[in-house]
Amino acid sequence: MARALRDAALRLGIGAFAGRRLSSIQRTIARWESPSERTGPSERYQHLLVHVFADRSSDLPALFEALHQFGTSKQRVDELKLLVSDLAQPSAQLLDFVVPDQLHQIMTEINGRIGLVPFVRLQLALHPAVQTCQRLITTETELPVEFIKPVSRVLALAARVAFETRDDEYAQQLYTEAVAVAGRGTDLGHRAAIRTSQTMVTLHANGQVEQARDIARAATVDAHQGDSYAIRARAHAVHAEVCARTGQSGQASIALERAWKSAEQATVGDPHRSFSPDHLSGFEGLCALYSGDAERADERLQGAVNNLSAPREAVERGIVTADLALARLSLGEPAACVELAHQVVDLAGHTTGRVPAQRLSDLRRTLRPWRTEPFVMELEDHIHDTLIGC
Image 1 (cartoon, rainbow, N blue to C red):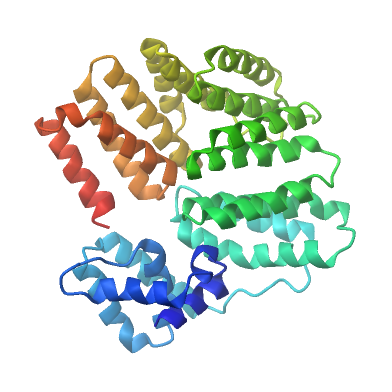
Image 2: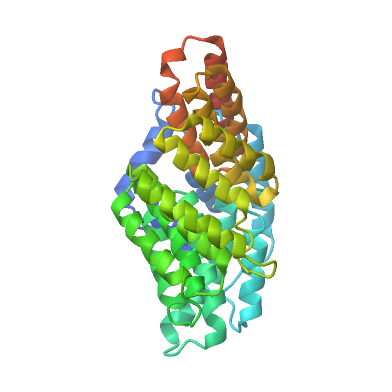
């Protein structure tokens, strides 16, 4: 079974598992089978198990029943059953003949499903395109200029999805490839967009603030060599957050001022227009929170939460709602904080977003002085039922 799980990880490009020793996987399986530990498979192991058992359909009911006994939610089991249906369709193969529009279409479709579909399924759907892009950059001495943007975008999106599925080493590998490909083009604003995403992943994957700050600075330099004012705004906003997290409130304020000036110059036709003033308000609110201005943070974060309503923005809404909850707690309103935290639980459960879950963990620690209050105990039950019990 350990060998089958590792082979499935190799086939699906799940790097964190593909490189794991068989003995390590065997010990994990032993914990599942232990009558005393009651440790169930994680979501990624569940995913691999479905792939292993899909060829033996008669065993699938037993697998699903076992997951149910481990406390896996009905919603999660239904998602895994849907995966089995997907696997029954002809499997996606490498694109033998690919044109840029195909890659763009694949990326757009999968990008549009973020917030609607669990990230582990998006990783699978994206894998054939990633393999195609990696084959292109290793076999083509001179990558045709029309491929530079779509290839780098696919790799960057795959990196973000790998981060969400906790495959951090693979995520950084993909970001490195994406940045290198984007650097072959003339639009360095495009490379800036990739670097802003890489900054946030570096920050939240392992807390390497110095490394994240270096990437953020490089992103701002690239952004000012491109034509998109929206990406300039995002680059400065990301840089502001990193500065705020390290106590550099003055530098954060300067970066935010530059972000707002850039946002005001963004045009309707800007390809990065999806980074809106609402997103920027969220960054400003977080910086205010770090500088100790809870009232300013509450104002800016509330405005962002009210306007981040699109399905694609569900992950961002979860993050900003968690920040708003912390602002309410800083204003001496623990009950209001918990009310918002309930929303974060639902958003984290729905999107499987990693950063909202991290923010929620931070909130739980901050709420410890109120742990005996009924409203906090209700939140703990909600977290267990929605996230821990899944």
